Length: 83
Image 1 (tube, rainbow, N blue to C red):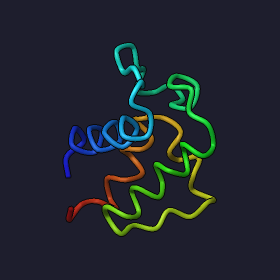
Image 2: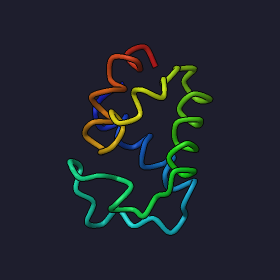
Image 3: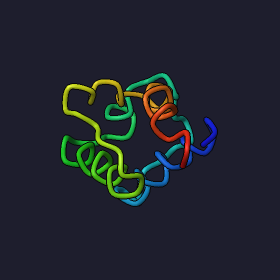
Image 4: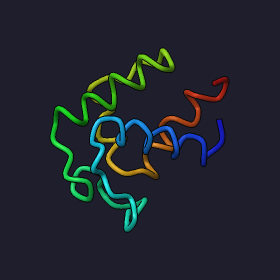
């Protein structure tokens, strides 16, 4: 997958979880939870959806790697190469 495809997947998953999410002023290097008012359950839903769609395991210790859109891309890029 390309960088843009991974970004789109993350944003699509967030949109599915929170249909009122506004990505207009989203800073890709800023914390997603703060910018989109995501709580811990929303975050877990994102992780579970990634696991379901792409059969990737994301250990709890790696959750901080998914804090921003940019860090999500960096973390997921090597894991989604074949997707």
